[in-house]
Image 1 (cartoon, rainbow, N blue to C red):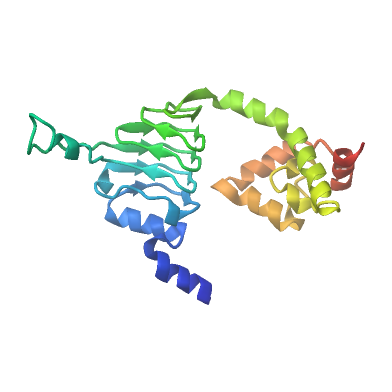
Image 2: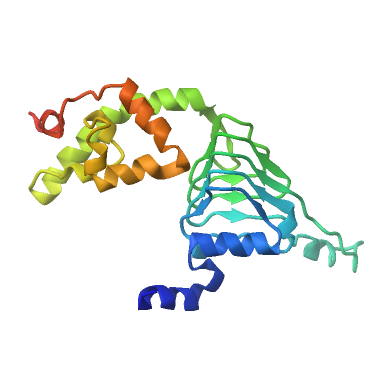
Length: 239
């Protein structure tokens, strides 16, 4: 362990890494599946007053600033309110997150919420009601924006234009052509399965989510739009 990692563990303790945070949450009673990631564990407070009330499935990605709440302290107002002086009324509930879920930055998930499978939660959302499977949700309060299949078609249609914009803006900013690694999320536009082993950045993306074989099979069955990186980048930068 290098000094930087050691210092990080000293400062952030169980929140030093995604792995250490997940181990800690499991130890205190949170039910967490496999292949889950907290991208910024020190910035993702999970309500541990009732940890056994939280269940997180497999393949869940939790980004910076996400908060998961199983209780609130609103009863402190009622305890002092006229006519209710002294009474304590608890407020707790389950939070259940299904499989294959992405939770965007700054999202707040309140008690008594169930999020289904194959769900995307947009950044800054406040999730106060259940989110059904196979959907995209966003807003305050979060509401369904579209279904997963429609979202897929939208993202698929945008790939080439987004990659082109990346390339053009890179050249404007740095005055040189970008290397292939810049397009580590768009490499399927120009890279075939044989090229994957020669590029570490692309190989890492293939390995994500634990289904590398499916990604390689997809590439075997679907030829890239361009025959090479040079053909791709020339297309992106042509006048």
